[in-house]
Length: 191
Length: 180
Image (tube, rainbow over all chains, first blue to last red; front, side, top):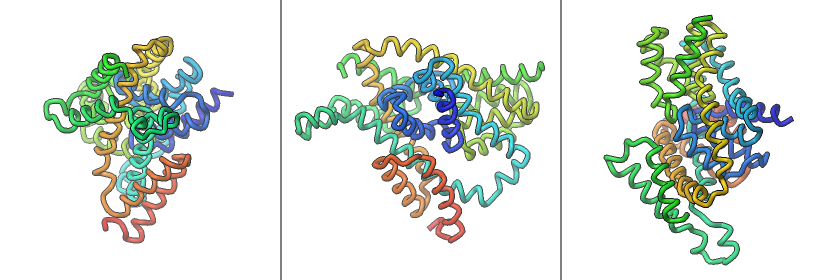
């Protein structure tokens, strides 16, 4: 029963992904690896689409994954799965909001959860880098170390990094701008 | 009934106008919730937002549930949440439908190969931005490295890391390791 599994997988994501949209990414990679519903490469594309369309990234990704896995009902069920734990947890703590905010136990838990969350996102980044900047298939074929690196892609990554971090005028621009520019570069230089 | 509809509509507008989530959502929430409907004060909104960040799940959804609950009880919480996700479900389903049928076009493939490079940089920037708040001492640096290495090179479920790290945070604080 794919709908039940979709709901369960996204319920788990909603329950354990702490720290906003990007924190759901490692869970989606985990789902991809275990179920084979979609590939790692497709997931990278979904991140781009989720960043460039209205709506919270986490919700957009759940809808996208659900749609790819099981059509429109899949999109709805994955999204409902993602938000159900939030709704339950928030309704539970809404009555005791002040106590929750000032609880030393909660604070201590989050002291450990925050580095965990970015550790997981960094590991997901590692998977995206493997797909976007490296060429393991070609390297396995030729055995030449230089073939492991996709030079065009690495140059684009370096330029983007400088633009998004170093250049004052471009730094504040919305990610959609860089995503569109990268799409154009990809088409023009035949990535 | 009318109130529930207003909640749904207000949060659907928040969903449509939020690009990317997170902090981009605050000014839109303020306009809809504080200015237009007076459902919460600015301070309350900031409280909800702060708690929404440190509870599991998507921040936008958590904040919506809070405000919906405050305005119209548990049903309000559910309706506000459905409102905030509604535009995403519609828009993404349309886009995903179109993209799936064009996925094999060579130009589309090239475009997405370029976009994936950009996604790397965007995720990298997200990690750097979160870094300052998360890695605050030696213990959190060790936690970060352990989670990163174990997660990147072994297929361990993220759930396990989350549970262990929350426990570690509590123990490290209790043992007085925190802040050193």
